[in-house]
Length: 119
Image 1 (cartoon, rainbow, N blue to C red):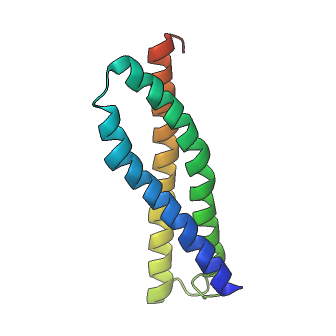
Image 2: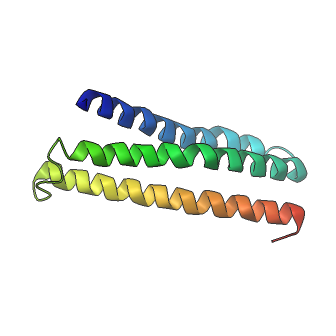
């Protein structure tokens, strides 16, 4: 059971990190090379799909990480080096998740509003 949880946590973490890297280093630079009308239309479409993909993937990564903390003893002794490392990793992951959710949603909405002229 523990191996399955860890495999799922790593799998979803790879999807989350890999998806973000692909978007930042491939999709965004490619989008910047096309005209604004097509770039905006693509950005809105891509952003909506990315939001539908990245939201559950990131939540599942965090969830499996939290669940893994119980059998591994991370939640029992936060003062122990493993527990404190686990806590810091969770806080960083949560902040990254929150930032992503706020930025993706807000930026997609902004681009869509600028494209349609309606709030």
